[in-house]
Image (cartoon, rainbow, N blue to C red; front, side, top):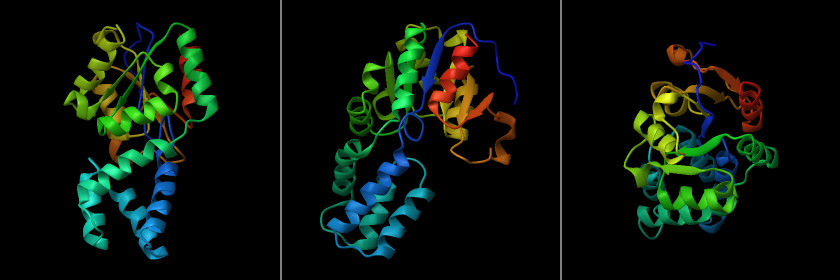
Length: 226
């Protein structure tokens, strides 16, 4: 791995979806419930999952495609709003990851969540999972008017922790572009949550400092380097 800049402060930023919580598992539960509610067949359920895996960026486009595909009552915006209400009820964090975050803060680290997404959905996830009690701050792209990989969003999260954005720290996340390239551009060292995936060859120039399977693994790494 390519070494990053030296760390001069105990600052740890974390992505939310598929990093601190298992968003894909929650989405699979949502898709199954949505298909059952609208009496969609197995092929339709599979389509929902495939479209989700292929979609990038804000979810509005996904629900426009769902609405057009199945001709459901109501608007695409109403489907999206229903999704945002339901998803916080379905997400969960691994107990070991929650314990690791608590240990990190007890060791004197300042921590924050940096996430893209709609404010209502992401804040509800943070609060319902107990993450709100384990971090010093969070930044949600819609609320801040900034979106990863923009370095300004990481800098804002650092300032909300009372940290100096120019003094280094760490970013942990599952996205090669949003979290790793974005974190490096913000002057942070990086930990990639690989989820069993190889690092994308096209992203070799922004390879992470470390790659681990879970947040608890990343926290152990940070504590060992403090």
